Image (cartoon, rainbow, N blue to C red; front, top):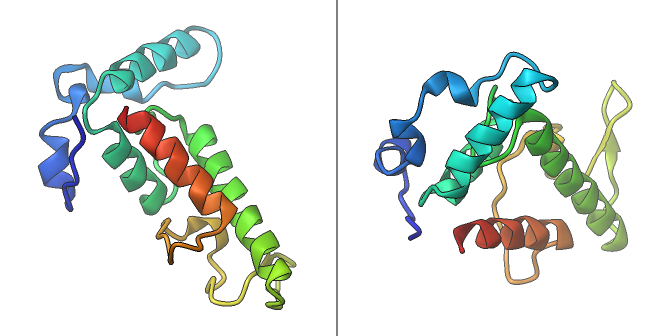
Length: 143
């Protein structure tokens, strides 16, 4: 089952984590006994009917603590970074010139200096390869 709910309240009520201990999704660390806790949280997410909505929310919201949509903070950060790098490569290929911020980080034009923290929004049928990979990943979650 997949939901296309537009707001948090609509899909949140269908989430599998509603019946689980909330502490399970917010481990203290990423190693040792906390690793078992993360695996248990991911198992709850794997059976969740709104997992992809949860992950979309977490990716759009930026850095959130804990397991959301079946991914840890680090896993979501890596997914956003890969998307941002692929966007930069795509903009370079299209001839757009990247600008450099005072911190030395290059962002493609139109990124507003936010880079990977921008929410994922497919622009057209000609979406970048990173966007297609993220959409593909999310569609796999929905199956």
